Picture 1 (cartoon, one colour):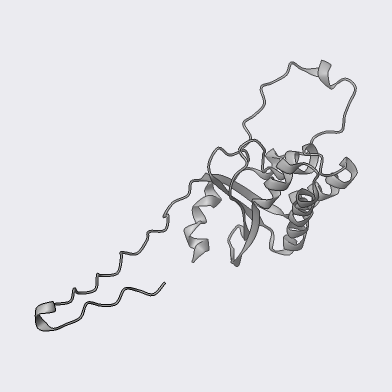
Picture 2: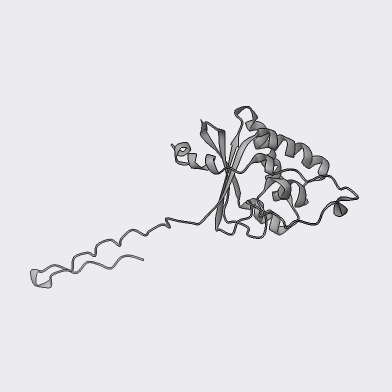
Length: 187
């Protein structure tokens, strides 16, 4: 049922190829071309929460789960309190049913860190300092090889709990009818 409700995400998926790994450092990169303004990071949110939908190839679910497990483990072990809090906000869920685009995973961040990106690449694998480049590159390859598509979306909290109405008041005693007033509740 949830797969049907979220099928619209398939049409807004971010291209997997658009998330290239950073190139290894080169001596003449700065002289090649004038700097372009950085593209907006679709994994940096200003909302209260975020839902990132990852469509994973059915035969690559263990690779996908390994990468996110490695990322979450490094975030939890980080000396940087902001990165630990970032990791504490992340939960990874797998939809039981397979969709036409593959196995659907939801990576949910709640609350969102509005200062850090939730992008697995480049931020979490390469820029956050969680992994050495030699560790990050194979994880990046595993992740990219597992994906059919990604759809990140910010979200606001909705449907806050509504308190039930108060219980009806007990009827008052009628002294004229000889009824005693009810005893006060015990404390």
